[in-house]
Image (tube, rainbow, N blue to C red; front, top):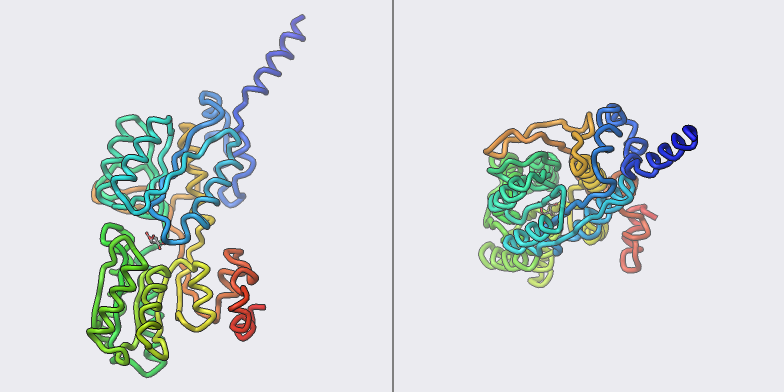
Length: 378
Ligand code: BGC
């Protein structure tokens, strides 16, 4: 009788062991302490097996969010916690829409918010709301300023701007255009990252001898607005007098290149970008865009997912991940910062393709086949 009783208790306990226990087995070997008992079953036993995790992304005109951030995040959450649910929203560049989406997620029982803010400053109101409900907030990719956020995960964004600036300055030097006039197209002024990219770029461009003939901050990071800005710059500077174009990301680079092609700028001057988005890489292979920045979004999204699953279950962050502190004017936020890489035609293969970000077949679709052969991608 006692043995039967014990067996049924054991069976019941087995059934009750949270699905998220799996997390301990599957944490990458690199992060040793993550597998320790401190983050393991002791904490998980007190919590329900599932959990609701809100992922709030800022926009969809930039390709990365739907093509990389969201799928990698959702897949990793499922892998770590089969019964967890991701409440996903995209704000389409509308800060008040994002506020409503965050409130809806909280009402819906989200146990953690992973928030990539449309507006780095006004998103502090979302954090205040979450904190009233004792819900932790992870600032994803963009820093939420002036707020009590729990963690920040991103790249070294000032370094992104420096790499872009250096690539442009070095290329123009190599082409003998040291004193040329360039156009500078920055990102959205409401995005803290855009400020960091801009600071990083200026730290290299200012003092390089290049002249800035026109400079814009691009509301909403909109490629269409970047195109209009470039049209204005062409009118102001003259279509044959532009030595290079600094664009903060591939979306704005696409807009600027479209404006130059429409105005008959030939040959196209070197243009920078960021995100290694498919269209950007294809333009690089075809010789229309000079460079982009590859940010490995998979580890960014997956680490955010690991952190979110832990926080949703009241556990501490996986050990060995936090590698920086970033001040957001309210506090030093424990941060995980990843390293950006500059990509030109020469290293597409050893970076984005080698890392599985894009397959050669995806890049080399019909109209890019010749360019791909010339670049020895296929
Ligand atoms: C991201 C970039 C992205 C841009 C526009 C920035 O905060 O870091 O990767 O291109 O926003 O969405």
